[in-house]
Image (cartoon, rainbow, N blue to C red; front, top):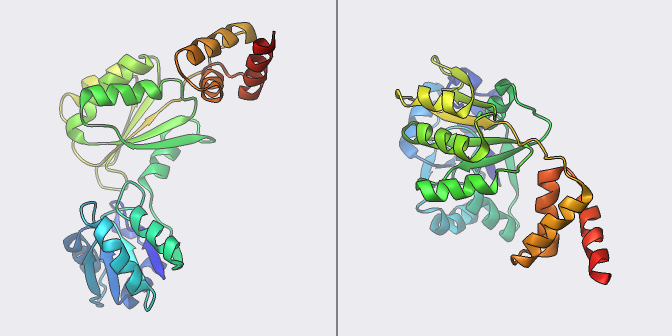
Length: 273
């Protein structure tokens, strides 16, 4: 089978007993960076020296079939540099290939920067969306943020230290500067830090230089209260602009808090008049 194994995101003390047992008995380990995994085995005092196969963004498409073929005869442990493989890390293509070939896939749960940042952010945790890394180019980043402007769920992003200040500034420009944001840095490590504030406050802080692994948690948009009549006008405008009726109703519902189904039925009824 394929075993996705979550590794510590910083503090080695978070390595589970099950992870250590699996690595001690593994014969094949597919690793995002074989050097990082070799250091992890040494740091966890694991005497076993399994065969290490590189599995990263640049070779996953070509390596997936080979690794899945190995997993038909023996267990293959898959690790990323930190956290759970396949979540903003290599592994998705491998899992998809394994599923297609009927090979069992399981996971060893463990540390998650996404869940930890959400839990300590102070933002609502009942509904959230993970958006990964924002685009590098400013124009593409703005467009992606604009598509999320009406998102009512708490949003979680990964970001690099070099782009943090500009991304926070763009969030302020697109979302408005009243939106609460938490920047979580170096989670589980010695210099763990959480900064909370508005986009402009945090952008000013980040301009001074920030180091480490970073997770940004953003408060969701507050639904705009609108009458059914006004919402219907918005739906009609989107449809006239080329948006499918179903998609237009969903977009307006997300922005207003009204029922997408009710808006859809309202639109159909207006067409019959």
